[in-house]
Image 1: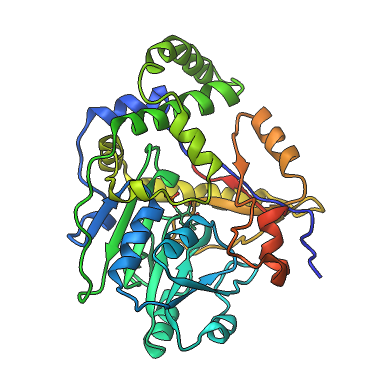
Image 2: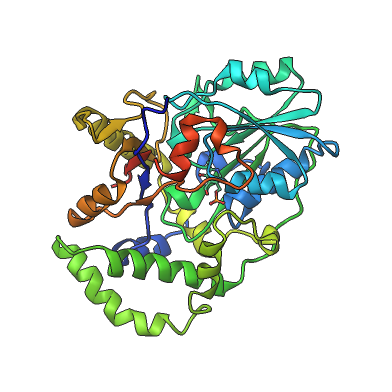
Length: 374
Ligand SMILES: Cc1ncc(COP(=O)(O)O)c(C=O)c1O
């Protein structure tokens, strides 16, 4: 029985605004501590970083990777593109790996396990590391929803044989994926090539124009200023990039991994954003927002929090909630100047959704979250 029927997920991401872009371009700081070591490699997107990481594992042909039933879909694409087969294991409703289900998934062909720190809420990594060592499995750590977080004094992203981040989700960067190769026996990927600047322009236009001009109803004086500035600057911006064609195509193939992107580096502007971001301050800010929302949200027929308590050292992407009427909530939040969008609202074609009442149905119709970055 799926008692979450009728619930859905919504989400929001940080964007560069006219107010923040000046600060980003002005300085040239250091990369944040968690990305400073020599075994970090940057790519256009997180899925591309995963592709390179999974390739570095050199898994034998016909290998299976155990992946969670609750997933984005793009991470599955990266693995499928390498010819790997997928075996699904369950996660609990508090978003933790169900170890019994993972163990039951393993067979003679299983060579690796992918685990995800959903919304930045960490998995028990020491336990999972021991589990993988015991079963002689490679561990792939999906840090797409977090950055600069620790567990037991160790950075997330250092437990897996390989780990990857999706930097544009938590930072106002137009793109950005980072791969960390932790195991000494793995060969690092070849250096990436510069991403075409037209792609960066298209992302910038999407961020600046769609988010700030098209959707946000100005409630504050600063938002009105942003809109005026964008009205003034947009005719000039539209000369750059390919006029949204690439983004439209990417949206249409949301679950696709674009092979031509695999060699692309992260955009120079994203390096700038990364160098000028105080990730520790950002982490504290996100934690404070998460706690604020967790303390304030009253559970009702319509809205249910997924996880209220989180460890102090984590860096949440958002405050996840199950929502009955995602459209209604999104409209309500937008009216209060908070933009959100649907979250993981379709099932990946490789996923046998009918077998799992939770969270498969969430992929098609049903669970949710509130932004934690403001
Ligand atoms: C859990 C998870 N893993 C991987 C990815 C891939 O990240 P990116 O969009 O940077 O390719 C995403 C998001 O798309 C995600 O939510």
